[in-house]
Image (cartoon, rainbow, N blue to C red):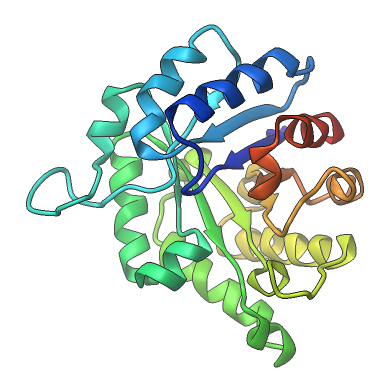
Length: 249
């Protein structure tokens, strides 16, 4: 049975004191749940977050990593560095990394391979932009992103993969993705994986939705059969909103 997951991507927000305060509030209010709950503070606050949540069920995860083990890559972080401070899961391929930092499918393929080689779990993000959706190419774009970065994996590696579908066109554009559109794409993703690998792999991989999930829409989105949770942006920065989304799962 695949995991239900709610993950908060804090992006470039919250200093040390703010991070400690938000983690304390979220952990204090966390309900009993079978879902996996994850938070992803900035790199500079990861180690302290791990220490603060040592006795909590909340997992601290990283927002990114480099594919090299070490070397002249100023400003970058390796898998070993993350593992050394207790981080075992990393977000790769987020739409902002693709858009603002030029991360290509080829780069992401190398990052995924590097993370899996270190026995890390990868939360792999992908999704189409507004022009792709309006031109009717959204399925083709999503299939291509999956194929280019992940379809070279062996079957065993899929037990360490979490997928996070981000409809970029529905984030900060004024456009709205309906729960039905989310389900349609998640079902397509699962079918695509079943075709490329096996139905068993497709049925067991968790697919999260990353299209502006809020307390007001979380329950309806999470009720869809192929939606296994959410990668939460802005709402993850407000404890009560994040907790409400966790309760919705």
